[in-house]
Image 1 (cartoon, protein in one colour):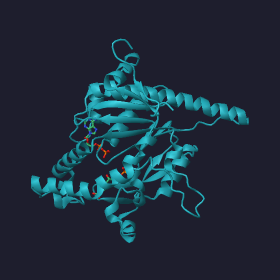
Image 2: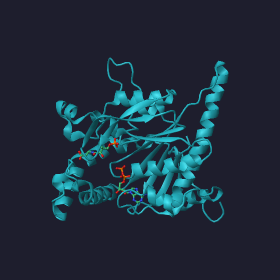
Image 3: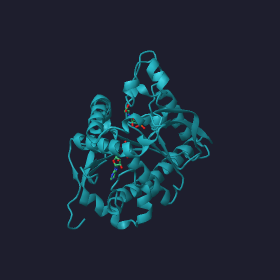
Length: 320
Ligand SMILES: Nc1ncnc2c1ncn2[C@@H]1O[C@H](COP(=O)(O)OP(=O)(O)O)[C@@H](O)[C@H]1O
Ligand SMILES: CC(C)(COP(=O)(O)O)[C@@H](O)C(=O)NCCC(=O)O
């Protein structure tokens, strides 16, 4: 690594810390597989995602993941040989965690595109955990309609079953679908996952440890099935600003749809909309970040830390 110092490691931390420049150097050996059009397509609403960001940060990460996929498949083969069984192909499962509005879905979408271009992993499926939120009626029955996104608002048993079935190679596994437009689970709608090479599971709480409840024997949690996990991190005030910006953007687009649950926000003035977004952030999303999401960061295999402009300034990779 001439000219750029090496990543730092400390005895107390299980992570190797890369500055942006150190991490970006890793792209040198790996050809860029996305063009400007692909990157444009990957942009979410109001996004400034640029080609350099994809090339310098996400491309090396996708290459590392591709190596992990190969190594994990070899490990499975060793186990099958040891057991004298015929090896079965096991999907590689990646978890993507972080706060509401930190950029989980964007990260997951970019990784999906890049991974699908590497050899051996053409079929990458992406599932978000919001499909496993309890329907509003059930949340209401439990008195937790204002706790959407908190661990207790999910049907965690179904989520674990879903991921475990995909991992066990079941030919077809389905998941429920959440609509941000109607703010509820869509009755009867399912997404179908058919033996992918890689499954990306994206959601606020995917790194939550299992809770050993008294009297319950099955305490598996979704992260027990992950082969790799990414935590997307940023300063809290930056994430809040992104949340408010996205809210304002949606007010001009999705909320304008009369079918939208948030249609009543379409007529708010800018100041009123900013106030409302800050209120939702302060009442729901911030407490969830502080109490439930941020404490899981240290469980991730890799942490991406973003600056106020969404550019990744630091990458921490677990070495132990
Ligand atoms: N890498 C990025 N570059 C630019 N904008 C981004 C990036 N990642 C996310 N954003 C923007 O930040 C907001 C939140 O991102 P999103 O992926 O929807 O977050 P989450 O899935 O965590 O709620 C969106 O408005 C999105 O366009
Ligand atoms: C749907 C979400 C819970 C995120 O779900 P995820 O896919 O991360 O599990 C979140 O984006 C959300 O809408 N939170 C609720 C905030 C509110 O009630 O307005």
